[in-house]
Structures are given as structure tokens and as C-alpha cells.
Length: 524
Image 1 (cartoon, rainbow, N blue to C red):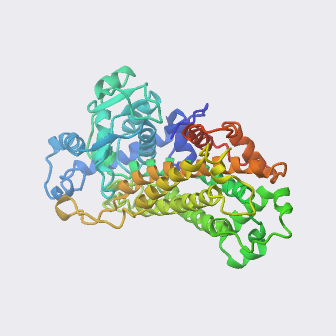
Image 2 (image 1 turned 90 degrees about the vertical axis):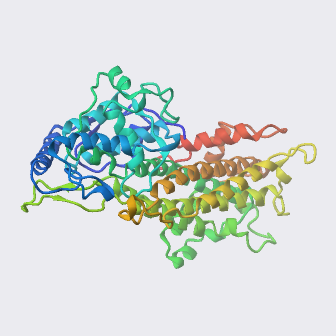
Image 3 (image 1 turned 135 degrees about the vertical axis):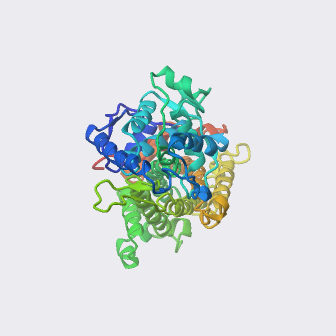
């Protein structure tokens, strides 16, 4: 997943919800981040409540107690800072390959924004430390596995927090957002290089830093940014396929879709009609065509893509809620009239995100799956009414053409089918049973990231194949929308005149998708 960078105005943390777009600007575009002054004052007001309560005699979880199943152990006032530091150290138990820099940056801005909502009881300097690291491109080294997605993303966030206090490892100003942090150095050295001092944690601050859903939310947010571009490419590829396969447009009749009443289906049919508007390929075989119906991969495209897109919209709404949330525990209510203004709960539980990510994986599997079926239908050249060579070979037998692109699409779809198994339905209790129902949302998020890559590659293959196939329809022309798609693909990939490795062509088209090349221009 390559980063898209562009000049960006600073993102101001003022307690308001983030958006998918703002997170991507910081994660991939390296936009600067600022902490609003009034928000800093609200953070300090919340901190005052925590300080007052931690100095009292009543045990309050996260302030003067142990954690998890050790919550009944009372911590002496002179050990409060020590227990917060120990919490970060002990919970940094991650394994596996490190998270890409773009994911870590997304984690950091989502964490900072959550803390800036002034319900976590941290010092404003703690938020400022995260902001300073972001603005100086200090990227903590964070192993990708270790979270069960319930009591927050504990292990990954602990590795992030280690760098805040001058421990752990990080890169400083040298990581490509789309790759893993390279050549990590000690955390204190990374801070020193950009003029930052290690943070000293006070009561509750260690817990506030690790007790949220920020890794899950980060991966999911960037996935949604990518999925949005895949969606436009998938519709473009489907429209292109209709004329490349010499299909009818009768199944796009608006009256038919209105009777089904499914909003996604209606929108997809409308978009396909617009792409094909003015096609002379369709009119050339409208009469006298012996075919009665096209295969499902063409005829039921609005129903399948529409259902998938509706599911994506549902999942996106859950992630957007999370981008305005506070997800650690306990939470502080400084403006409350009640004397007990610190409340323990379960906002750290990742189930809303876990279900959303599992839903996205299923939706992407169908987006890719129906595209692969169209690729297979076309390359098999089994439709005698469509004048294409088998495998789109310039000379079948001497040249194999695009035969193996369908194999690759099939392999990607098989991987998608395995990734689509829901992670959220499997529970393994932790912390001696006190944390007895976990979401496994981090697993779902990591699977989703892979699913996005595989789906993007399948759609790239369809665009490549159908653009080649449209050449067989010349001199007839498709609709203006489809012809723009053809021009876009041809800007990166020339026509196939003899066998050549398809891999670079697939990668080139995938790059167009990532760059948003198939997003319709405003007003078109």
C-alpha cells in the first residue's frame, strides 16, 4: 500500500472526531499535527480530577491499583509513577513483523485525538509528546501481533508508549510511510534527535496510553481509504467488462432495480448505465443476438456489488464512530455534579470494530470474486458472439496471452476466502479469566489489510484483461465513461502484441487504483 503524499494543512486536535481522510493525511501524507490551546486546558482540567482522586484513600482502578486480575492490589502513593512505568514495560510483549510506518502514524494520531477529548485524565504534555513525535517522524517499532482486541490493543500500544518514555526502539525521520520502520534505534536516541525529552508518567497515564482500540482503528481507517478507491475501480472494471464481453445492458434497467429496493444495487446499476452511455458496442448487437441472458458475473453484478458496497458503508460508519471516541478505562468526567467523576467501564472492547472488519473482509471477497469470474468468462472465449481470441493471445498457441492472469486472480480469491473467516467469533479468555470475552479485532484488522491488497490485485487484473479485450471491439466505441477507463489503463500499459510478463502490467494498474485514477472527475 503505497503512500500518497501532498502538501497538507496541519491537523488541529480540538476534541472533535477525526475522519478517514484526516487520518490518511497524517499517516501517509505526513501532515503536521497541532494541539489546540483550549483543548490543552480541558485536558488539564480532567487531569486535576485524576490527581485529586489518586491522592485520596479510595481505591480507583488504574490510579492506585494493579491491573487486570491484579486490580485488587492497592498501590502505595509513592509507587504510583513506578507502577505506570512497569505497566508499559510488562505489556510490551508483541511478536511478529513490525507494523508499517503508515499504520504506526495512524495509531499515534488516533491515540492523541482520543486523549485530547479530555476524558482520559492525562497531562496535556503527554498528548504534546505524541504530537512532537509525529511532527518529527519518530516512528516506534511495534510488533504486529499481541493484541486480542478487548482490553485495548495492549501490547502494540505498550511498544508505542515505550518510546514516549525514552525506551523501546524507533526510527527517526527516515521511514517511508508505506514500509516498516527501518533501522530502529533506541527510543531515547530517537527522541534526542528531535529535541524531545522522555516523558514521566503519572497516575493513570500508562493505562490511558495502552487501554484503547487505536491499532485496530488505525489499520481499519487506512483500509477504508484504500477500499474507497477499490470501489470506484471495481465499478469501472465492471462497466468495462460489459462491453468487453459484448453483454447486453438490459439488466441495468432502472425499473428492475427499483423493484428490488436495495440502495447499493440501485446505485451500482445507475453508475454502470452512466459508464456505458453512448456505447456503440451495445447497439451493434442489440438486435438479432441469439443469446437470451448473460452469466451471473455480468447480469447480477449490480446485486452482488451493491450488497458488498452496502456492507462497506455499514462498516465504515462503525469506524467513523470510533474516530470520535474515547476508548480507554476508566474515564474522567470533570464537569459531573456527582462526587465520583471517574467511571470504570468497557469502552476499550474492540467488538464494534471486529465485526466491522469481518464484514469488510466478506464484502471484499465478493467484490474480487465476481471480478475473477468475469475475467475467466472473457479469457475462456467461450461466447461465440464475442470476437476475442482465447486468453486474448495475439496468436493462440504461439503466444499464451493473459492466460495466467486468471490463475493469479483465482489464487488471490482463494486467499480472500480464507481471510474472510470471521476472527470475532473466536474467543480466548485472558488475565486469569477476568477478561473473559475478547473481540480478536486486531486479528480481523490484520486480515483486512491483506484482504485489501488481494482485492486490489484482482480488480487490477480485470482492468488489464478487459482493456485488452475492448480492443477486439474496435472500431466500435464504448460509452464515454468506459473509454476514459480504457485511456487510464493505456496510460500505464500498452496493448499486448506478443507475450510479455503480465506482472509489471498488473502492478502498474494496481498503482493506478491506489492513486485514485478511477475516481470519476467532479461533474463527469
